[in-house]
Image (tube, rainbow, N blue to C red; front, side, top):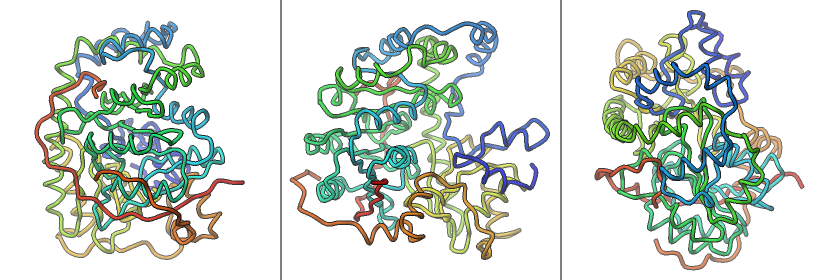
Amino acid sequence: MADNVTSLFRGSAAHSPSMAALTREGGDGAGPVDFCIPCNPYFPTPAMFQDMAARLRDIITYYPSSADTITAELCELLRLPPSCVAMGNGSTELITWIDHLLVRESLAVPVPTFGRWTDQPMETGKRVDMFPLQEAGGFALDLAQYAEFIRKRGTRVAVICNPNNPDGGFLHKHALVQFMDAMADLDLVVIDESFLEFADAEADPSVVQEAMLRPNVVVLRSLGKSFGLHGIRFGYLVANPALAGRIRSMLPKWNLNSLAEHVVFMLKEHGAEYQQSLQQVRRDRLEMASHLSALPGLTVYPSQGNFLFVRLPVGAEGTVVRDRLLTEHRILVRECGNKIGSSSRFLRLVVRPEVDVRRLVSAMEQVLYGTRRGAAVPEQGTGTSYSSGTAAIDRLMSETNGAGTHGLAAQAAVAGPAPGLAAGNGMPLPAAASAAPAARPAAAGGAMTAAGPP
């Protein structure tokens, strides 16, 4: 791997360069071991890839069926009414349309979280009210405090990611249903379940069935993450027929590609393999957390996603660790310094098979402690720091004269109390989940607001 990783990360509009760019830079046609992009490493199976390869010429030569045809097939698998589902070219397409059509003036979201939930509404001039998850509480989301924050701010749209990205925090179904009921007067409540397939904290954690019965709830699901096929770009949302139809009416008739169609029509023949892949990821998550927790000074937060959120030892700077892992060990990790509510002391590490995890742990031992476990790598010197950046962070810094989220926290308004709030199905090929540890304890939250341009 070439040494000019700084330019690769600076030149990327995303948080990291694409795997294609890294593979080209490597010069030997091989990319790094990927602990950055949260894919399912066990699905599709080798046999499924062989089937797609054998049919590739026809798949990419001819037009796909209409989105309605592909959606109907997916709904048959999910046992959902097609009138309540809209499929998109990736969940980000659906987030874009949710913002344009359903977010009028303001949106609340806990941070850190998936960047499009802060960036997208800010790019269209909406006010984004950011509720900071507390590191001291393990980044757990306290729904009662979040509801109070929403009432104080007068926010009209609320977003919750379950599990949350990047920390993997999980909320039980009954608590989410209570929150949805308490927020029934809002314009919209979005529950982003993009990583819920990997959760095993309860047997039926999805709220899609509840969403279909409510006038202001949308549930977002991602197929690329659980199926290990980010490049195909397909996801879907579930809502009552009016909301789902409003989104669906704005999508192009052929917004889904032929590979997406081929995969959707393959799934009914590979349900058992899919379930096995999810179970293996859950086992790997426990093993990986155990291996990483043995590293001195490294904190590993409990997760229900297919990734682990870790805090580096004191003195370690994330961009240095990221770059050395990439250049010296050909391992790609997600440094979270450009996530609002996080810092460069945090990495998000995707769950992978044990052979890859042992390679990661060995590399981190060398980068963090040298030839033996000792002092962590020093922080970067003044003038050499860099980050990949996001639209939200650029705007936050410009609007607060460099004070960033700390400046915004000081500006947060305080108003009246919140009303009382007590402390589905539709998952692709739903699995019977095994028992797992309970969700993390709740954390205190505070106000942090980023306002769009007037």
